Image (cartoon, rainbow, N blue to C red; front, side, top):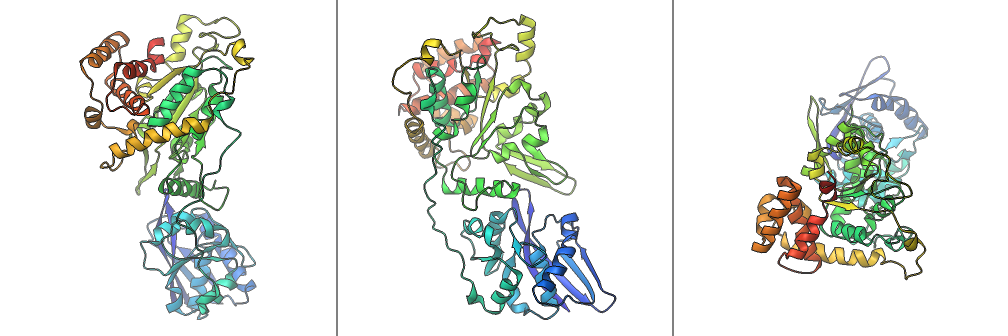
Length: 508
């Protein structure tokens, strides 16, 4: 007796189809699973057997063999429990093969037959669109998430007996429906730029960064508000499109950190500790998982105290900053993780932190300062578009009774308008949506400089020693500043402001 049931596995952040075959043959009772299962899949034998019995069905007293195809790909996680149980029941004659072949199944089983939620439900549902199935049955706790894919009907189920009833009477469960327009993003009212006192220059630089999608480095003494302002960056970025929200939700779902069942509205904000390893940052491991750069996809990755990260961990950021993805190569195959994020980093100007002013004088020697700044390599620094100097906050600014600073909503509105200009500019480009993503060819097309601007930039490069990549970064930032003023041309004022955002080049 033989049966075939369809499900999905996870490779990277995407799902791929898996066929689960069950064969029940005469012989001594046994239950074997083949097809490169990991320990979690092997342990499904001890979950499926009691789940079938506690749902009112006998477990076959024969030799039961389960094959997970394709057999050359390692299968991981408990998400195959439901499909394995149904394949056994179908092979034992309790379910018609014609009925079970119409659907794909996903879910972990408890010993009493309850179907438990699993990671990656949205990725499964998005992959189901490529398969000839009439619907996908998922745990009820994952149903709202899976329905976001809007690809195939999604049926929420809570118990194995409920699934068996549905297969005999498909009208017993209605597919979950979800609107095509996601609700408005929830606002994080506690994180607003109106709380920031002073630092007008830094606020302006962060607005430029948000408007063009530029990476930014904040440099200043302790207590100058670097971390406070960095944590408010996600609040001034334009709202995610529905597709961007789907991408972010899928990655967080696969990683098992999606703390609600619906779509992720706010742009991700990730802030790893400086002791994080290179694998924790970019992903990988024996069973590759997304790292912090992928979890920050379409959002902000904040690296506080940048020089305190290990040199190797910082250097592995160079590829995702340039390519907006991470490629993890293994002997069997390569996996690609999306990593389109805005890098926001902060650092002190010297080991003691008070070189740029503060509560006490700097106690560092020039050699110590040079060694500290050299912890950030030139190639990594070149990939950061904007360097902002955040001086110590003056006592007068702290106790000023002036009106509150400009709120995040007003800054976000200008950044959104600037991004709209950029979307129209790059509407014929596949992977370019903001000025920060421009290639060398696009820079030549959209960042034309007149004779006066060319002379100013040449003088700055000769004086400060900018690299070719630094030259391009300045042009991208100048283009964004012009967009904020709704100007087609880049003026010397725009270019001078962009050059001023290279603080660390001047410090070195």
